Amino acid sequence: MCSVNKGIPLTSDFANGDVSFWYRQIGLPARRPSLPGPRDYDVAIVGGGYTGLWTAYYLKQADPGLRVAILEKEFAGYGASGRNGGWLSAEFAGSRRRHAKARGRQAMIDLQHAMFRSVDEVIAVAQAEGIDADIHKGGLLHVATNPAQRRRLRAGVAELRSWGYGEDDMRLLDRDEQHERLQVAGALEASYSPHGARIQPAKLAVGLARVVAGMGVDIFEDTTVTAILPREGTRKATAVTPRGAVLAEYVIRATEGFTAGLAGQHRQWLPMNSSMIVTEPLPAEVWKHIGWQGNELLEDNAHAYVYAQRTADDRIAIGGRGVPYRFGSRTDRRGATQRQTVALLWRMLVKLFPAAADVRVRHAWCGVLGVPRDWCSTVHLDHASGLGWAGGYVGSGVTTTNLAGRTLRDLVLRRDTPLTGLPWVGRQVRQWEPEPLRWTGVQLIYALYRAADRRENEHGTRTSAYAHLADLISGR
Ligand SMILES: Cc1cc2nc3c(=O)[nH]c(=O)nc-3n(C[C@H](O)[C@H](O)[C@H](O)COP(=O)(O)OP(=O)(O)OC[C@H]3O[C@@H](n4cnc5c(N)ncnc54)[C@H](O)[C@@H]3O)c2cc1C
Image 1 (cartoon, rainbow, N blue to C red):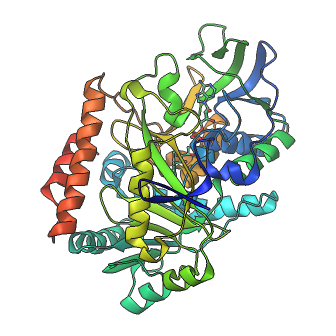
Image 2: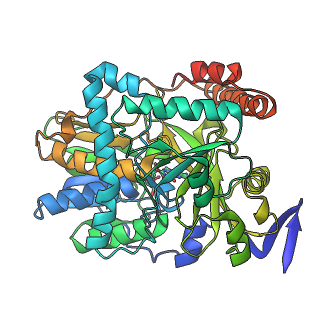
């Protein structure tokens, strides 16, 4: 039966929130015990998403004797790691030029190559550890649907040539290959990169948590850290919780989009919202119109872009910014998103795939990702204070978290490796502005990006001046 909400076809059991559809598929995991009282560890990790889990995984693998704990306020995989678009891609957040300015052009190229390898590393570990996360490495398609987008697409591919992308890493598709892969309405041109895999995000998070727990990492759930304190005198670095303090040689902050909730971190990384909808499985005759037999990851080339995947059970999951930011760096409640965002994403879905107009929407949700003031990711460890962190992935965290985990391992173990020399290591980033400037700025930036998209859709052959203005204000 089909119930219709403002013209959007919804399944009768449509749900909004409940963390994400990915958990509806597999069921929410049983909760692990919370912290029983004060404890002492070698490494305490705050946050049980991919960053925390990968860090614990690689630390334990390198030194099984290390005493490692993860302190998680809900359950491992509750945050963006259990809600994302399932894009395991080599995209790295932030301006290449900014990274190159700090450490040289070759360092940025090395970082990009490390990202290529990280995609395969995640796939290899999942396979080796028996984590079935519906992984399919079908590559990544960017599609331009107006002349301005096409111009940007071509310029982008040309630009990437000088940043370590060879012809095999990213190329423009000729019309035949584009059509063979995917029928996107109004597509003018597309680029393809093999460095991308579709995953079911919650399966990866839950699987990793299981593996890490099996390696002897203590995962304490329903345990909220309220503050993280540096080493002081003889007192070790400390994660403060209402259930007692956890002292450790190193405390690693792995809270990404939730970081603003920690004492003293309110203006550190802005919790940017991203929302998704997923359809019911599409019938075979609709897939005949759409193609997408290769299960490539898909993104349009708009400023307020959408990202999509074909799921292992033949649904389309599509996401985009929606309402970008909640005043005061608030976060959502268990993933419920706004009605207008569901409508917006559905319109985008039908615009790209008119053949899916009658397919019903099964689930909608949202989550937060962390955005640093300069929009560039960071991994850091300070031996003096015993504090470390990784995040600010700006929506490209599924793969980057793996690189972060291996880098934090090397930093904690004081290993000087190619990873610790990459340009995102040890960056200091200024804070976001106080409210209401922060809220006003983000609203303005996304209003401008949307205005730019409208103009480009109507008649632009070049990137709209609105988008340039938005870039300028955002400080990307
Ligand atoms: C809707 C959506 C779609 C996305 N799509 C993609 C995509 O397709 N590809 C991609 O590369 N990236 C994507 N991202 C971004 C990506 O999911 C994140 O960058 C990545 O998952 C971050 O992992 P993390 O472990 O750092 O943070 P999270 O997964 O958010 O984990 C942080 C954890 O910390 C816990 N926590 C928070 N505060 C505290 C506290 N005070 N005490 C204890 N625990 C705490 C939270 O409960 C949470 O479990 C998306 C994000 C969203 C929201």
